[in-house]
Length: 410
Ligand code: ZN
Image 1 (spheres, rainbow, N blue to C red):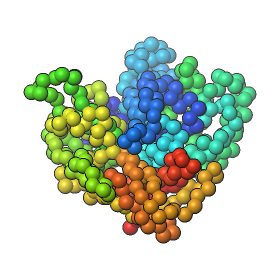
Image 2: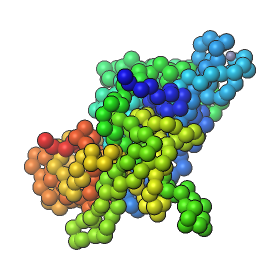
Image 3: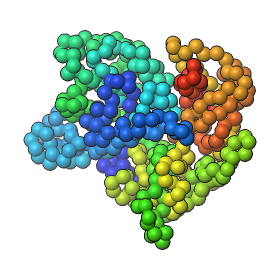
Image 4: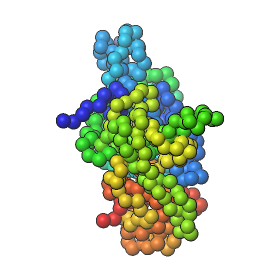
């Protein structure tokens, strides 16, 4: 029998966001979840990791009211002030910047079950970034999309309608041709309930929980206060999203590639970590079991110095000995995105590239390139499975630009 996780305790769907950087994504996420995801301004940090913004909320519904106005994330119905009952928990995944947002959408495709596509009404549609986002949606083949038309208060009614028709024209013939388009005033809360209702109606992913677990580590931290006595130290916490399988309390888990042991000339060698789960949380409540969907925190017996400051981000976690092999180099099949503002040439020998897969970001060097097949030696090892899509960034005029995507070559 398939165990059913509590749909109000663990997210049933991970929703990625796409949209031009100035189109009001963060305010929309705030209106939908009451959380600002825009805490992390710098995108690719010194240690080459993209920090994902994660916002969870529980949608509630009033049983006395009809239509969208019955949907809210507060405990009280906005229509009749009566109590609103929990219906489902969902998660929004966001990444800062334009290049990183697109790279994350590709690299995190395994983690994203639906997309909120934000398009502002105060600019003609499509803008260049918006076009590129539709291209990403087409590549990923995600049909589970809600289009949100933002900033309608700036332009007024007739311009909003005209812009709506531009969007309709723009998505014609794409995988999201029939996606709903909702005009929203995020700051005034107008039509936020409509979006919430649509979220409850999105097709939910069917997670496979009867297989070995595979979790992407999205963050990790040390929950001890500075100066805590050694004997009282709590073990490190590892936060991530399971894409399949489940974890229970007391499970032994392995984290790969693990921790760096020091660098040789070529690359840093790593050792996987094995630890035990001491408790599981959804961020606010204790769970008995972790299933796919949303961000979950695993408290472990790990030395907190390993987990502090996102030290384990980019790793994957599973049961001991059940994860894919760690790779110091990869053979990949590359597909160009043909971005109009990037003139792509063939790969030069020893050209440096950035590969993003799951939550891991690594620098690599192209050692061999034959047609679309690349051999890339990595600065740091990665552990990914065969289904993972890899975002590929190249150095274009001294900036890392997303130029294509790849999968492990078979
Ligand atoms: Zn009501």
